Length: 594
Image (cartoon, rainbow, N blue to C red):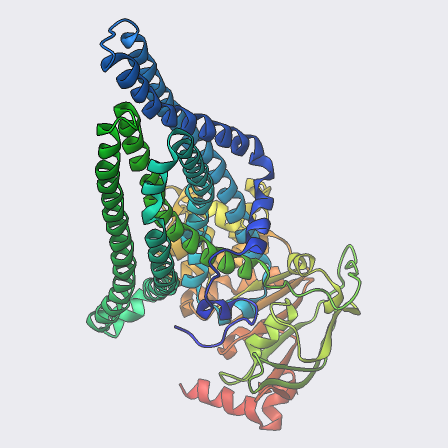
């Protein structure tokens, strides 16, 4: 697993969830609002079904005492019909209750997942650097599913079982207190055993949640980097590592199953002891005429039903433990704060002039070593400026600050004189177009990827953007043209084709400021030459910041800045920098020699 974690989110991996946290449950049930009618209907069905179930043993008592032992046949058919009707009613009501509760549970979890996804969309880039994607996926999938079970099968079932237990206890005491006390003799053993297994189940379920997050994280990381894994022939080693992680999860699950199975078997055994005591004592009472045979039969039926909810409560305790752990994780993620604006938000002008200024900007990732040190630079409206420098000089970090993926640790950045910390990040990113080195594409059509920034983009604008980026020739060469389906991450396209589509995607939204972060790095020289005119057209009238390793990319810029060790060390035109004989000239000579 990766290193640093969010203080509000990552650290919950190692904390134990309480057995029952009323605060978390109150917060969880705020999501019930739209589904309250379903919940109330489910509770009513549960109570009615329990009543239909509990009346059946008493009907047996009546049939035996008042008809069978009395030698009366008339009326026995009516009792049998009532018994059958009660049983049928129980089955129908149980089906209706389960469906109603599942309907509410699935709707509630769908709402919660949507909120989780929306919250993730608003979190800063640094959060995703600190938290593995596999762990975040577990929150939205595995943990949300645990909450669905907690709501649909856990809390309501626990309530139903407790009500059923209470009703059975009341019936037993009402029918015969002495037989009831014999039945309850085993209760202290049940309580002691429940406390014993509760602690162990709590620990094992906590471990299960951590282990499944590790499995998801390792799986996601390896599938994302599968080409690198295959390139370095790591398949066998990674398979062995996954077997280890998977086995640890399996062992944790088996521990849970072991304790749960032992507990269920112990409840069965204690229930048998209770029945044996009832047969011994109750049979003696029947022989001496103190208790009717029908009462003893009803008691035996009620005793069996008494232990069914106790067995169920053991599995529901497991559901409750899993749900509490999931609640802590899910709410821990939802409580991760979205960085607020540093002051009241200010709108950007209706049309940006495009003046960009960095004033004494400093930046470091998560308290690490400085990446940018006192950077000061200015882009005039419509000016095209190139930024070059060695790997690690801070070029891409500078772009991330400009579009507010991160915030500077010192200094300020302005666009048309407006401090970016006072601007809504969403509005800012609509006005600044960025083409990164990795032209990430989403599953969908070619056209939908170009129109990704604006769902309402007309078809002609999509085609115009593709023509400007020189992407149309290869698009029209595909079998379905603009309707061709793109696989996940653009797996069925070449690196150059993906980059051309990424260029078209930015051109389509017509940004006032354009940033090309090594945008032609994945394009061969022939393709690069073909799109230069398109890039020039895209840059016309816009402020542009071009980051490149290839000096051939700099032909369309007005000025060049050289960044080294987080500082701007040179600035000027191509000819001026060559005359100075500094770092830029060394770069130029190395590339010309290469």
